[in-house]
Length: 103
Image (cartoon, rainbow, N blue to C red):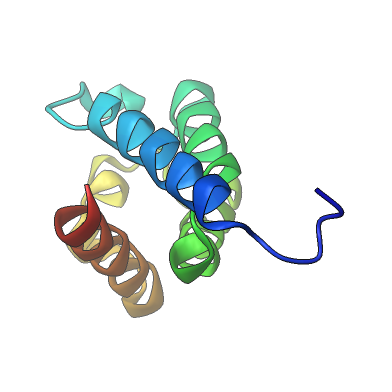
């Protein structure tokens, strides 16, 4: 492939990879996971296989995780989604909706 256009097969493969990674991230985590290096690694891995329609949403979420705004030790409320900026909440909702519709 010359990289100029995705073939349906590569798009399907990317979607399948995304769905596998997304499924691995579902379920409860300890509060200390939110905003941690492990969390960032998981978000980066998901972003690396994200289909085009949601890549920007995942990048928004990744940038928020990287920003250091989540500090479970000094500010436990910072790891609560409802306390995150609206654009980050929207990015998460869009990613979840995409996964529900496509995975």
